[in-house]
Image 1 (cartoon, chains in turn orange, green):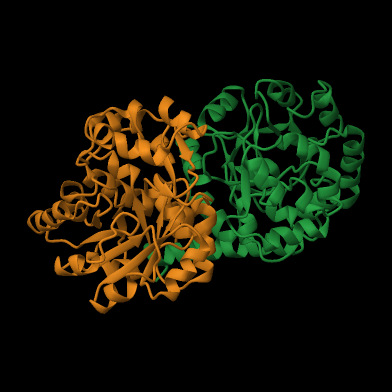
Image 2: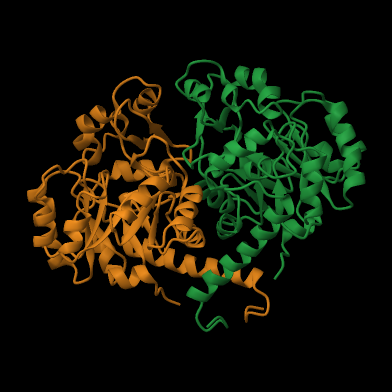
Length: 317
Length: 317
């Protein structure tokens, strides 16, 4: 049993699992562990720290000989040199997000890269396909981080987009194991992206308090924070984020102000720790390779059980 | 290809699809069409009109010789005689919802009925199993109608509950076709419930304007209305419900005040038309039998495609 679809061929990976591009977190220690496990690590640019990112990409060359990608978070990286920067680094795969897909797609494609755009709606998907992207990351509202204020769940959004476009789709939002990966494939995805599951991984650089908060969280343990302007955010439920949920305070300002303390100081109660609803399904901190291997095993077990129960005379009885 | 699992055996149906118990809508014309299509029609009690419901159940006997069920919406039917009422009608299958599962489960089980409780969280699921229910309806926040204010998507909630309980699960929220049904089965369900898809069916008694509003809706076309007390509601996005979403007005009061006009007068803009996010996936009004048959066909096609792509040497190449 192995994967062989448009995504594995495009990316040159064995396993069509992509690690999400979390700001400050999606750097070489985590991304190289994902790539070395046969999946696809991604380096972030949403931190805006391009000098540090350049060094991270250089480190990836030392840490893995497998493929990896870079995310261009358009809302956070306003430097028009970003395309040149990514191309110079020899990166072959880019996801673009948080912005207009017409902005960088042509230049990236002209430089020979494979480009997937992250979309939260059908409208965004159609616009990205029109702009010439190679594929889509279709992101349901249950996921963590920056979100469309009008959130739509993966179970609804993914098959809708699948029914209207032909390009390969990576499903994001709500995915942390083989059962949810198999569900995404039933809905038309050829790959999945994991964010919160990777934030909680042993190789993730965040403070252990954040990982333990994910492990402790119930499935109702996130809040969806709308803002008057800009994207919504999904974060762990704390006294502070519940205040933000009630409209008291500015989520983005508090995210930025508390970022270092939350990410690397472990002060979860004092800030905005971006996380998806799958926090309620994660029960331990594990090495990336264990997460990937178990997900793959569960995926095939799930497909096998579905086939065995429902396809008579197909060699399964 | 056919279904044969704990749910089809418990319910005595060919097809493990259950129609949701929408107040005023889940009556004999719709429910008998669902049962006659080989799935399970459900009669509602959330309208509180028990005399009318008694007549509806009597009509079901004339309209179908197939199994059907009744929902006891505990928050809306405060008459303690409801159990006796349901038992007297000769009903064999009941879903209980919107209340404490310990309240009626014992009496219904003692009368020989099969009882499923509707749950929006793992905590609710564990409590219902402790109360002795035969199974669960696990309801994700993308669905329409009354919801837990801390909504969790089906893709996250369903596999979480599946991993912690042994009873059969009917998945609800986000399901309207064979791909979403297959995804639910990958996540551990043995049946699915459809609400919005059935509201839009040809045999649904609501005004055609509501059905057309569902057909016209985008996937972002619902709002999630929290209230200071009581459940949240998911309804079609209109100018009025967007005002309610911003906290201007009382969703429950406006639902009740406008109910007749919305449901049977077609005044969608003036009221609260409960609908799930799948409104964005429904493209036409169709007879129930077409919906059920296509869903079943797509379900098996989806499972077959998953198996063919991923199970080599299993008779699929």
